[in-house]
Image 1 (tube, one colour):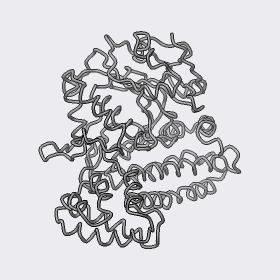
Image 2 (tube, one colour; image 1 turned 90 degrees about the vertical axis):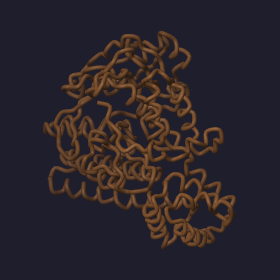
Image 3 (cartoon, helix red, strand yellow; image 1 turned 120 degrees about the horizontal axis):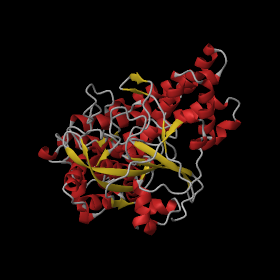
Image 4 (tube, one colour; image 1 turned 135 degrees about the vertical axis):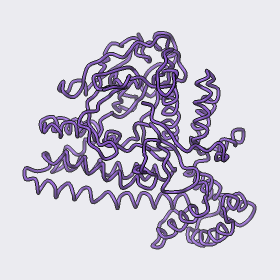
Length: 490
């Protein structure tokens, strides 16, 4: 077998952190997609992965030397309700590898069969959920947003039963780690302070080594997780991403986007937008993501209280001090990011108000969020570039007023129109994984046709490039194509 160099650390933690379990045996696995660049980053020969021996490894049929398959334990708040035991119910961590940049990376099979944490689930994944996560996670990576990655997508040859029989599939997922806020909650619920300390030390060593040298290492850990999440959620908002299920078991302490279930991207700008079919009350609506992020982080801080100080009141004060940094950190990242989308590099006193005015105009006029910012760079100067922006507005005169205010601000930038356009196109994607396109891919794939999947993968790998041959992939859905609900894969 190809020299897969595993260097496992989590599997060496105490047994109560996980269960040892082997993946289920797929009947007739077949490779749908292989991320060759990611394989090379991991030091794995992508040609070998496409051979039968490599496919056996990717599908879980054969356990490679050095691999120690485990399902990790965690708890979590799901839609605000605490569940003391969840865990990897349909995911199995094969082990850890050190990539070519010296980073430790988890390699996990998602949809690999039942584990001790599956509860009533089958531990399998349907093809549609695997393709959605492959497409969206790789699109997020191309957009420069911290995320888990997709190494391979494999159809298993088996069927899974959901509302109807569906083709089964496995996603090979790569992450900095799969440690979640819910992992800490699992041990906090059991008042296992020793395990909390072991886990916190592991996370510090693995993700935030600088915290080990701080006067208060566990407070430094909390501070860095708060910063990472504030920046991450701001970056979601800048591209119109809606996670859909921001439960505490879906928040990675490594600061990566994880668990692409009923996720989606905005078409028309509206902060109240919800796609997830299981989010009946809009808890995880687009505009609620920052406050839910802080809510989740507060649950994380609660688990750390025994480590922050011996006196509970002192520990709470330390936690509150670090949590208070979330809102200003998020606000700064959001506003500065939106200003860059508008071609403004150096913020001025009234710029935050300009940002809110623009967003309010977009909401009132049912404007497509992605197309507006991408087309706006063509209207830095008056002329033909205005009309493609105006036609996005229900009331085109609102666009005219916006042009005046925006251009008056651009004058203060003291950069050429060409420079401003270049900078705007570098941060405003032309292509996102639009919901109707993903549904088209899934529909075709369930019939055995993966051509649209392959095309969309290629388009999304270059989100900031003009691709005239694929210009239709920029278009928002027609009314009959509009996706109104997305679904979790379980």
